[in-house]
Every structure is written in structure tokens, then in C-alpha cells.
Image (cartoon, rainbow, N blue to C red; front, side):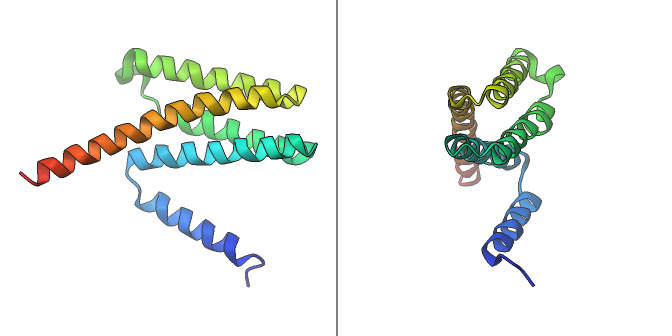
Length: 138
């Protein structure tokens, strides 16, 4: 039935995670997927696998634009949301450069930027969770 049972399990597990996730967790999943796509792009760049590199970079750009940028509420988020939007769009421009020029340095730059934002997002989530747990114990 399944040609790759591990892949099928991972897909079902991810779908379950997405369906049961709160909005914060959904953003974490977007960061995870973008980071994984960028890691794949680096591997394919190093192996000179142009077709797979293109797919991985395309996936990362899609996650950033259709997921992270689209999730921003620029009206209510003010300057922070506007700055994040500008940074995400900069990342996409760097990934387009990496795609055109087979430039792993540009991918590394985006990996660092994305990792920093994802780390802050995860820390914020942990702090919110701790605050909510503390409030429930009162």
C-alpha cells in the first residue's frame, strides 16, 4: 500500500500536528519546514543536484511567502510586523539569488536569519506557556 512506510508515517504525524496545533505552533511548524527545506537545498547545492536544489529553494520561498509573510497582521502588528515582512521578503530575494547563482552563502545567510527569528518565536511560546501554567496554578 505504501511504498515508503516511514514517509507515510511522517506525513500522517505532521498532518495530525497541524490539525491539532494552536496558531503559535503552526508558525513553529512553518519555521521547521523552511529550515528543513534550506538544509536540503544546501545538501543539493553541495552535490550539484540542480533540480533538487531548485525544488528545495522553491519550497523554502513558498513557506516564507505563503506562510510566514501571509501570517503577519501588518495593520495590528505595527512596526514589528512591517519589519518582519521586510525581512522575510529580503530572505526570499536572497534565496532567488542563491537559486540563480548556485550560491550556498546566500542560503546560509537566510538560514541564520530564519534561525534567529524562529528561536525568538520558540522562546516566546515557552514563556507564554510558562505564564499560562503559572496562572492556572493560582
